[in-house]
Image (cartoon, rainbow, N blue to C red):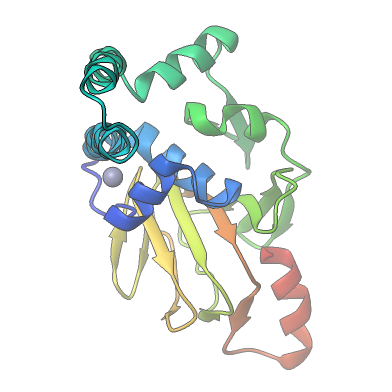
Length: 229
Ligand SMILES: [Zn+2]
């Protein structure tokens, strides 16, 4: 039943996430992935320890300060790490957030709960529905629902596209993605994501620029771009 996560953010992205240098929207997708991925929970915990230790080496020369620093690092790392943030959130927000679309209700990872509850109206086009999340950042963040047996038209990307599977499964030319899998597509990538015949899918989508659809009538291009962006 539990899906083993296969597609992860990559070490550099995780390092940037831990040091806090990612834009808020990209960080949101990474942090929701971490909620769903034990492997990256451990990895980001380890990176946190590494970064704290190297900060210590850079900033401290005197022996006493070194000891103080070591004590502080020991104290920080003896705590539960990343999960501490989730625990705080769960205290503030006892119920697990969920969203309902197409008569189906999906649970949402904690990192997304607050935002997901404030999603805009679902816009529907055939078997696909999108709802913007009000992040106020440069990237466009939305929930993307794809009904079973539905295909998103073949497209390339004018910028970065991050898709995190929250429920169900999608497949494209490069593989099959289940809950927790994070797909990262850049302007060079072309793909045709679709659901399987018997399972629908809910994703988080982070886009830094519109999609570019490769087929179909030109007059449909703009509405379609706006729909996904
Ligand atoms: Zn992972």
